[in-house]
Amino acid sequence: MAFAKISQVAHYVPEQVVTNHDLAQIMDTNDEWISSRTGIRQRHISRTESTSDLATEVAKKLMAKAGIIGEELDFIILATITPDSMMPSTAARVQANIGANKAFAFDLTAACSGFVFALSTAEKFIASGRFQKGLVIGSETLSKAVDWSDRSTAVLFGDGAGGVLLEASEQEHFLAESLNSDGSRSECLTYGHSGLHSPFSDQESADSFLKMDGRTVFDFAIRDVAKSIKQTIDESPIEVTDLDYLLLHQANDRILDKMARKIGVDRAKLPANMMEYGNTSAASIPILLSECVEQGLIPLDGSQTVLLSGFGGGLTWGTLILTI
Image (cartoon, rainbow, N blue to C red):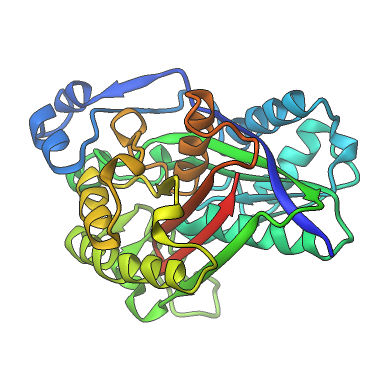
């Protein structure tokens, strides 16, 4: 039977840093107001780089670390809610940029759960036995999605990309998973509605900006998502004490505090980096994973048991438990 493992990790963010103080120059806000409510102190904002540009840099890093070329890849899955275009896919642009001419490529849209959904999908491709190597990347330029006059959303988000190289393995590394959606609550977090506008249709207006009911999303995370994480652990072959780290979507530091208590783990097992990057949606978990490897917290030798959990628009939420 074929198994899959994460063999390499990488991330890339735009060079430009926008601090809370910078935001205070263009809107009614300040560092204390933002940081005390979210933990965020700065974010990276692209000047010229697109979502595919950020993802391409991640792909190049992953291939360089593995010592492979694009032609060796079987697939590229790119999780994003801020694609360069709907067609071609952002993944197809990355495929062309890195010369992965034997790989199929597609985008996956599951908002802040996108990377977890994409990684789960990729694991099934590898487990089929038909594919040996693939890239799973989360990449976002959320700076083009927010209304920069709306302090309730503009202060939260940043641009960036992270990803992994997934390869076939003789040992099992993916231990448990839970993927969930609830479209009945979709209106609390929306972006990118395009209305009908043909000469044969009733005209609908487009909605260009990201909109969020912050309290509803906060409550969803600490109630539904925390419960789902606990259930996934309970139904897995491991105990909660076996988890070395829990890498959760980086939306809000207070969410992580409450999640740790509800799950019953030491807060130190939940690394955080939203203070440096803000909320990067589908990119947040792979950026955090990459940084944990860089810092030596996760040695990437299969010795660590790690839980990944994303949650956001859809509503969507998903959890994977794996050895890395």
